[in-house]
Amino acid sequence: MVRYENGEIVIGELDDTKVLSKKMISKYDYKKIKEDFDDLIDLLEMNMMFHSMRKENLKYKITDDLDFKIFVNNEIHNYTLICDEGRRTEADTAILTLDKTMYEQFYELCEMLLIKIHKAWNHLNEVEKFIIKSIEFDNPPITDEELEEKLMYCNRKYYQYKKSGFIKLGTQLQLEEAKNIKQFDCRGDDGMDNIKILAGDPTRKYSDKKSS
Image (cartoon, rainbow, N blue to C red; front, side, top):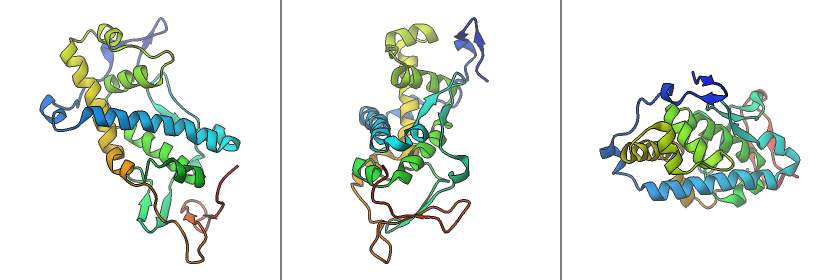
């Protein structure tokens, strides 16, 4: 549980367990993962522009407890996407694609994306969450030097936690694979674009080319 004192987070009490080892980190292309994550954040903003009439549902924020809060309707959280790629469910954290045209065409993918980020975020420890929140979501963002000082970490330790957090997110979301998928066929037997959502009403289907 994140604790605050005089309006400031008590950094010394943040959970710092289960950080990736330096040896494990060295096996990943951190720079590429970081770039893909930045593209993901841009996509979240674009989705709110594409579907401005449902913008409130697509908002998100990092709370004071360092949780990734989403506003998607709780009743439709359990998605199953049925298309030529097979059955993709909300149970895993791998995202389908980073192709913005797919999110523009299917509003439901925007909700699914938020759900998967929310799930992947929960795999981070509190220090990793604090670092990524400060760099990616705070306005203005906090610099690496300022974060090193706040955490009272040496340079090597700080970058171990920073890289660990982004790598965990990148692997949970499978960003590299998602970036290579430019499009997938979600057309039904009738030739119409089709995403089936199995939740609450298992017969619920969406065939609108683009939400407005």
